[in-house]
Image 1 (cartoon, helix red, strand yellow):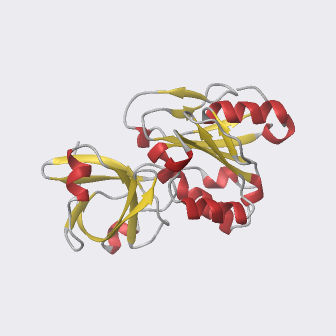
Image 2: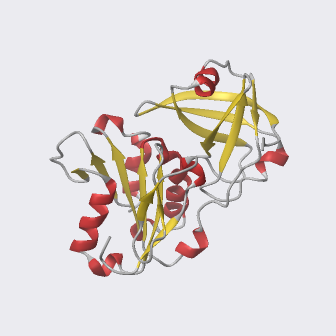
Length: 241
């Protein structure tokens, strides 16, 4: 069933690294009020087609931010808009991440590709609230140059929030960078520091389909539907993944 849409206005467009472009869209007050929790997403329509994007800015802001990668009719049409052009958007959709459930707990955040957009407001909120040391980001990219918003990654680390960049196609020989996939990096963390992972919670988002879901005490990948509709949390009750 199509979502009712309201008109927003493209305010700014900027390259943010990793092949991603940030679109900042000014939205009406009634739309802004529907974005309440990190992890919500939005349906955007243009030229008779629509697609979904994770909201990557601050909940409640009157300017919504999305991170997009060129490819596909809707995205390419959005990237072709001029500042001031209209963008039709739905209200913020989905329940978002259960931020209250993560309070007082170790939080592991796993993101791959454009999935970083969905977890970005989680990371900023945790760092702002002084919870950086009890939060860790595992960011999956192909090679180091694909890391989006590198200045923000540096700032998160400066605020005490550990970041591990997981490169699937490049060997790593420096602190904070590992070769492999995000799930493998988290598995190694669980094996090395079982006390840290016991009782932890995982928020995860991927740009290509997989997301974490509950499977007893073991977070596992599953597929189906749109990735932004599969944002789930998995709880680590022991050191096994």
